[in-house]
Image (cartoon, helix red, strand yellow):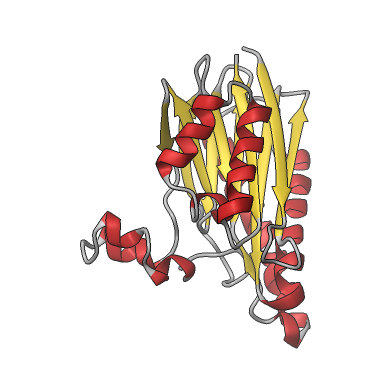
Length: 247
């Protein structure tokens, strides 16, 4: 398989600072792409500190500890440990300064092997999608209050789209001693695209609008740029997109 990767982030028109952070790197020894995205929260500086700590911690942990040979159970355990190292760093940093007490971050990480085998870990409401056969499939589940209401049948999906509870996270990095990220797995196929994005994109663009960006953009770079262009017009938040295309 051949892969093409493109990622970018914008502050947006309504935010003075960008609290989204991302890292993309390739582990040559085991031929694995690592894609990581964090959307920080918590005051003037807290969001930037939390998001940056989270992605740096995950990169450091996985670079040193990811098994040399892909193995689902071992990779899953490694991702959980990486998330909890990031969690503890943010949690402890928040305890050291009163101004940072409310900081935290979403965290989304994907491991993609050269055979297309993909493992995704998620905390918060940043999302992973797969573009497959001209359809955009949401892979992750949001950790917010509106999602809990939707899962319990108390609101409809239409109500969920505009519910204020979408802004109330029920899980985040740095807000508890231990976190248990959701884990998802899939095999990417030829012509698929994997998208990781912050809520500055999926929170303001409809699924139809996002799909149109993929239909009009044949490459990872064009898709990413189209998503961010749309987000810059519609979003009131920072926006980040990581797109990995499979040839």
